[in-house]
Image (cartoon, rainbow, N blue to C red; front, side, top):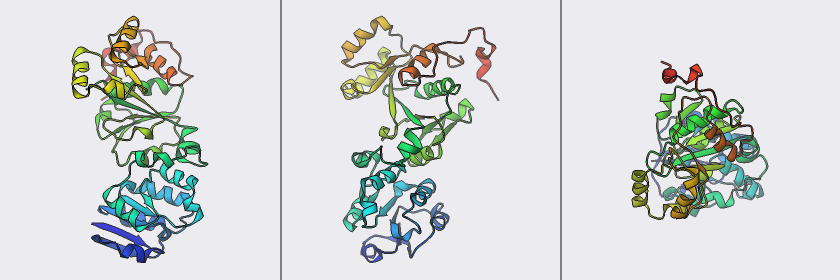
Length: 329
């Protein structure tokens, strides 16, 4: 069942042939809409933007995007110069608002075919002033995604290790999408979320220098500034990967592929690249996640552009590296 909130375009929206569980007409403060619908189940909300008081102020839409699942909201824009500008649309996209249109045909289409970031990326100008990914995020915050290409390639543990290495030089947190494995690291800066809530959770963390994301099966990696794709180059894992998709290395040839838990020596790396017909961004051997500093992790972070990371490692005799050092309960 659907919700319609209408004002200027109420006649247009009344002509929609859809099932409606609740309909409002008039102008409402954004907090009223949040209070009424943040815990209200609906399939889709069609929101006439003129029904939002002070909708010209993008802070109003930002507040809406933080508190509602915008994947379920279709925003009917006002037909004026402001909401027609590429800068305005870029700001909406930067807030995680992808479903917007100016006509009834667009509403009907989005009811059946909701947009993802990939569908609107071509109109997203990341240099638009006050854009979430520009002023509020990209210039101060880097979003780094980590995704397994081969089965169990170690994305979750690598995100943890990257966070622990970065935190001495940057303010950093981590998110995992559609899983709950982070709870086992017992770290307050590692949190779980869902695919639908990821844009909202990113917006809440604009004050961090770095946000790391364990993407899992999240389908829009373009939400990140950079993504590294992990491959565990054991015979078993490689054969499983190639059996699932023989063109996988061709598809990811221009991406940042990292060999993780790798026993491929640096001298053998050229042979691996030749056989896979792809370039490897970095080669990580099996590592001890209990160490406070691994030269190899800092090397990866430096190559990703984190210039403050040193290549030093802690002495193995450090008491914090003991086997039971991870047990905090």
